[in-house]
Image (cartoon, rainbow, N blue to C red):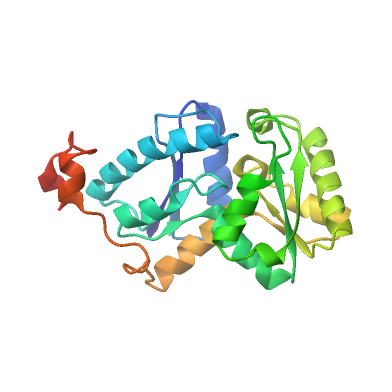
Length: 256
């Protein structure tokens, strides 16, 4: 049995939505994988701007210190397709930490020479910059065909009618196809949890990379292969220093 934690940055998602997502995640995981979906319990309701992203990271890192202490999980997935706090999370934990965006971009490169990202608006604007920065950091900007958008707020994707969302998603994928994309990555986990990628594929003829499916399967693979992140790239956090400064409310003995 492997235990995988899907950690939602922020707080405020309804119990019904968390239960719905848990059911979907369980349907993706193989037998023997237990998926637990949990909110950090502090931070924004959704991440649709840089300020919401950055305000989500501090509380999430504090939560990860507690998770490290509990030692209950074999891998962790950051539950946001912007991968907020990915590098420091890997420094804090000994278990694999999967960024849905990072994993999906690399899978997309195995499916096609160029890929597009279909994402949500940033603070109500069709801003490509955050996604481009994320892809540039991975050294994959030359593989990017375009960034397309849906004009639907994240919380309006939670348990609502899918018809309007599917229409906008399909239109975005067709635009990406016209610009030379060979596949499209969904750049929003709420979009991923709609589980409509098969429908979009049939409408557009392009493979759809669903970051929820990718992150769960990547976590399982890391556990199977006993892979851990490099301590050269992600040096282990100095918990003595952190405990005397930003994590001073914690018992230092529990961090050892």
